[in-house]
Length: 264
Image 1 (cartoon, rainbow, N blue to C red):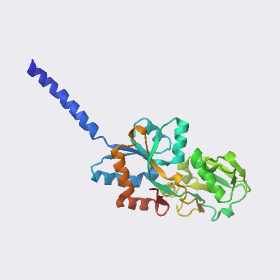
Image 2: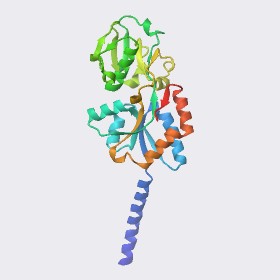
Image 3: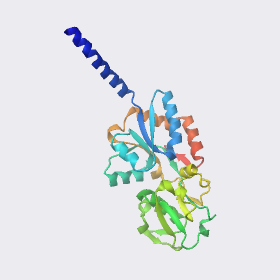
């Protein structure tokens, strides 16, 4: 009886041991969007050389990466800046935290029809992002261009209701930010993200009529995690690779040209 018991027990023990080994070998899962994927892929390859397995999960919207992270389907994500994260936590009841900075990208005002902002006609059709934070950034850029004025002090929290002057009576349409690069044939001017424009191949990403500059540290893209895993050593190792690997820096230069700066 004792011998038979041991024979029965061994397969069970082996199965448990195998499950533990698989758990230990589980890759670090990082969620992202297409605009940020290529340099992250370079970081994944460099991390693997150090024995760290990382799996990228690519999303085509700016909501699901945070939901998946909160639900523990991801270990971290990389696609958003602090204002966006704060708004997501507030509106969706999440509790996600910024762990480390990535890069900051320029955004610009793009047009296929006009060479200067001053050439826009009365009633020009203008497209900006429809989310609360990136839309505010777009409105600030329109104000910088002299097309509108905003109520004092609203900053990146600006909405259409905060427009205090619109001398050219521009018609502003709000669209999902990732779609802005594809509407340039349908509008006179659009807020644009160079990395999405590069992916869409609709116009030269360097050809914005006006850029907002990179002097806004609140717009640095962040590695974001949950409070319970913000100190995960695997995540810290991957962030170190992303920030300091020459191979990743080359991938960043290839992906974004001169339209980004490191935020660390």
